[in-house]
Image 1: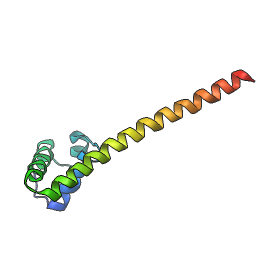
Image 2 (image 1 turned 135 degrees about the horizontal axis):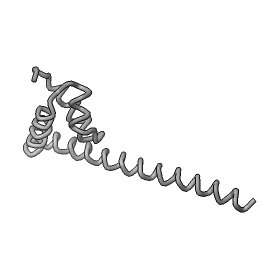
Image 3 (image 1 turned 60 degrees about the vertical axis):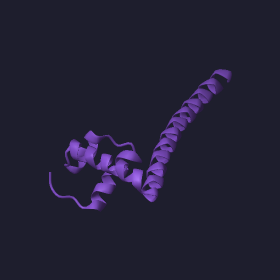
Length: 93
């Protein structure tokens, strides 16, 4: 594994923790080993134990991921309801 700067590592960690991108997809996309990414995530989580600012940032990333997933689910439900409403509107005519 090559030498990566802290900014690059943080970008990868953020893509995993905040966007929910899998280690495998990150590994494939950025040509970095899954174990390397896993170590970066572990190091970041350890840093959060001793660094209040990092811990707050970590909590925000996790909350953003939760909200993105919730929004995605609600959008799917909304789309389904629109299709159902259109279907039943045709039945009434």
